[in-house]
Length: 156
Image 1 (tube, rainbow, N blue to C red):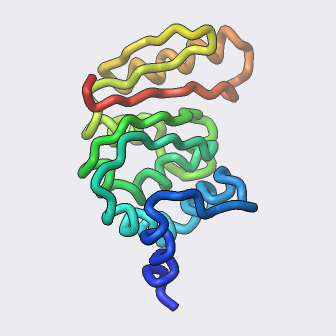
Image 2: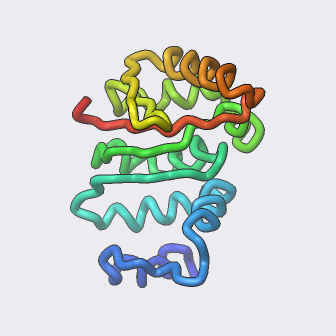
């Protein structure tokens, strides 16, 4: 049975949760590891009239997972909430963190860093996000193991 046929139930479900018993993080990791799964879901999402929000946290596999959603990112321009962990991105997906941020900028005018204390810092340049990550890591003394949470809103 083709992956499209397997996703037919998803299309009929109209967005209802269909993954009971399997944690969302596991599904996200699987989609990141197997691009054909992410592409199939992307195709299933093609039947949607709108996509307002995407939240992703797959510890370093975000570049691979989001590339599977590329058509829908371009089509719907959803708000994106994403973990950003350069150390993990380099090791898990083999991508350069700065390249990943530059790739995201094709749809988003700015990247907002969401701080743990509730404050936000808006960055227009991807290099500024990396500078914040370095600064936050140095302050926390975590040796490049700290992650940032990012908000990308197409409305600026």
